[in-house]
Image 1: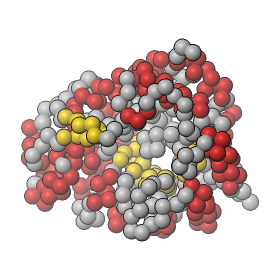
Image 2: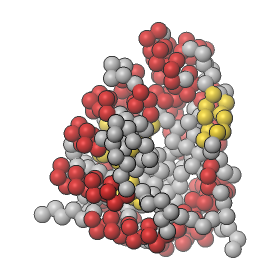
Image 3: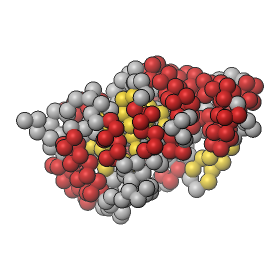
Image 4: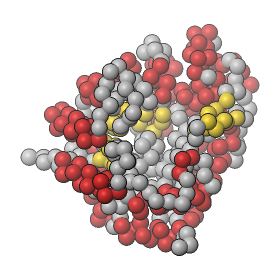
Length: 381
């Protein structure tokens, strides 16, 4: 059958009727407002296997032609419709850590389906010599905006578009300089590092304004995971993987300060990290405007996160195949039991991303989502 985007959009609208969307939004919005959900703990399944003619191995990082990238996402949204979770259809324009650096002239290298940025600065003092790129056109920044505009046009604005995953100020600075040099320059050339971090913060804010315009002001301001819904205008999300390797002595001045600028611009901030952020949880908790924390449950201890935040911050645990500090790699059902038990016992505000067992069939995924939905019930009496 010939690929027709709007035919697929109409099928999505049929499979996800307004009443279904409203129920999920009610659960999710309650948690984002730090309230108990009305009937059950919200969760999103990672999806189902999709029988597609398109090789999706490079899709997440926008490595496909945009027409195929859109088609694959529409196929995925349709395929996962039988899942009994709180997924709300949206389109993802891509994850590219070089989004901002390539606008300055940095180069990317594709290795094992991942685009790595080749740092362009030898030390932080060279940041003073940086020009002012046109983020609406230059580098990957321009490519992602074109993806967004194409998605909006091809779907006639019927499906909201998520923000891209482009990292946050700290990670962007490391991609310009290398992680090792960034951290040593915090000691050797702190003023230059602050200048670079300030530039990356300004660029982040500028680019998200462009992204929101390109999406027709439908931006879903969260990217990790790229299947979650956060109300437009409620907050802004960023990735900060360097949290896992940064000293708590450096974090307040070289990380938190710039995250708070983004929180001040957008009202609140959602922060994601890979690896273990446990040693920085106390400093993270001091972030003015922190709305949520996203982490891998076998990388950062859920119990430590719950101890630190209680119900004052939205907790976003997701599965991971990596174990840090001896944390167990939980099977999907084990993760659900662990998280849901902790939510009820501690009255936490949680939105859970649920994975699937390896080689899980479509029917297995559907049945598991129904089991999770049954376990998610949270009576308020």
